[in-house]
Length: 380
Image (tube, rainbow, N blue to C red; front, side, top):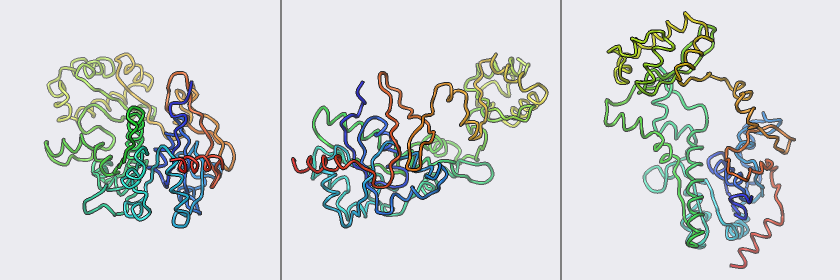
């Protein structure tokens, strides 16, 4: 079966993570992605060398693309011809830099009405922060993520959540615009703000704070609004996450794990609101019980009660995860330094599988693709 985006050509003037992550998904879906890099390359190429000589960040976000080197200040005409011949153009330059090069989404859409021109910025267009530099941790800080993460001390999320969040909204917007263009022929100017995107993901704690009791204490290993929902030590020294989502599940857990069905209707714990109000007492009872039974007995009780639980894996545990391995979620991918094993694309569409293309070396592109784009532009 044909790849969903077969025949779609994307030109990306991108670096670091947010836009590269979006275009990685487009490549996974079958689009041809031409990554435009500065002469020294995307700086994410040089973050580290841990993946057999390649950067973990670059390998992750750039699989399946082609790379062409341009000095956009010198080769601006070539860049414009590549953009004119593309179906989609995306960049994550600052608004000021994009405007100075004439590659901001609004300008390109006016010039090429059928083009889907997308851009990702830190703070969005307009307002006092438009031109501020914005990296992942800066947006985590500005959006309130730090304030709800950690325990006594504030903490970041341990992966590039702001970049990924913005990249996924860019991907969704591009796919929606491609669908509309298929029906109407019209392109689009798309703007995605990292701050807007991550603030949206923070909506539930934000609304709870504004309409509730104000800034909550950081909950660390437990959920701030549902109980019991957090991590607990088992008697063998391992750690397990237990997640109860309803009063019915709590009654089941009281009977099947705690061996005390009466706790299911104890006035201190009978509703979620009461369990949260008495969470220290509640968790104390759970910890006490878990230390008096074997780890296998604890897991068995949770299974019998149909209570959601999970191992708390380190990264080595994820790499060897029996579910990922049983479902063959890893694949060999070529890189400039040789083959490596990477996670497969999560896309699962009947009758088709992502090609899992290689990670490109700097300026490793098919000359025919550049000529195709230039010919497309000349034919307009």
